[in-house]
Amino acid sequence: MQMSDRAIRTMTGMVVSCNSNKTAVAKIDRKVKHPKLGKIIRRSSKISFHDEANVCSLGDKVTIKECRPISKTKSWTLVEILKEAKS
Image (cartoon, rainbow, N blue to C red; front, side, top):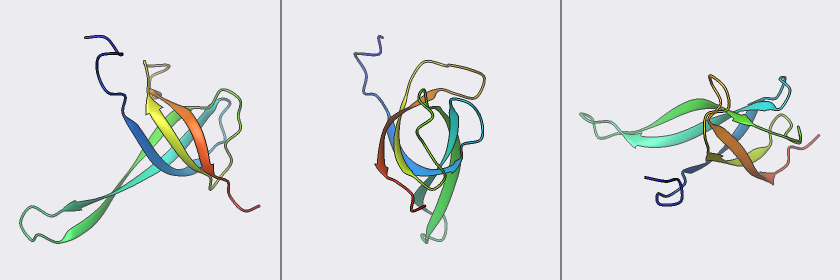
């Protein structure tokens, strides 16, 4: 199966770290239903992504997409900055 045959996964999140060169970390929030209680709970995960031009800053809302593995922890790349942080 080639990359063009399957849908490319995209996610939207908030940048929580941008200290490394060409790398930033986004926090992805999602809501899931608890299996027993049925209550809606919040879950989050931190995803490292590739930022080629180092344009992201702390607090930006970004869209990232899945790509080939770039390093041990990076398999996502920046698509666009949806909302810039107030600075």
